[in-house]
Amino acid sequence: MTQEEIVERMHSGRLYLCDDPQIAKEQLEWLDRVYDYNHLKPSQQKEKTALLKKMFAHIGEGCYIETPFYANWGGKHVHFGDRVYANFNLTMVDDTKITVGNDVMIGPNVTLCTGTHPVSPRLREQVAQYNLPVTIGNNVWIGGSCVILPGVTIGDHSIIGAGSVVTRDIPDNVVAYGNPCRVRRPITEQDDKIFRGDMPVDLPL
Image (cartoon, rainbow, N blue to C red; front, side):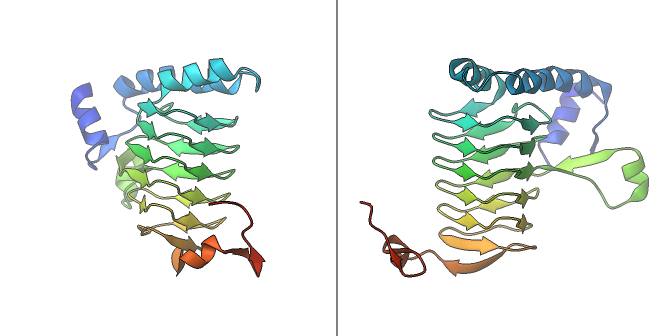
């Protein structure tokens, strides 16, 4: 199988062998960039921004990723919008496309996973893999230690509670949490007035 055929399979949900030497060599080059990013000082903001622009398929303005972070393709297949903040220990299994909208907050120890494996033991012995894209909408907040599984889409403005395992799509404008993650309630105009218990919002909107 040619490298072009393997790449096509990576991005079409078809099976391929993830240890193929044709792609393994390129993957190591992208992993070196992750290493370089993680070894920049917190004060080296300009260098961090410049390196992220080289690593990611697209990264918008005002994005920041705390170190350490991990991406097994170094962000090659990742598209971030503007003003995305990711806390410590973000892990992206970016074997195919991960798309994150604008104004997204990602808590510590979050995993965004596109790669998965077949159930068949014989296929897994061959390190067979297939990938499904992950999409996160605008103004989403993902709490700490969440796992977003392959093929999941999270809608605009939604919140994913800490520790959730998201196995299916989440619509716009909801609070969802749990393992597996489920929608618990909608986000309403009342949330613009009360932010916790009976505590009123006293900031301009």
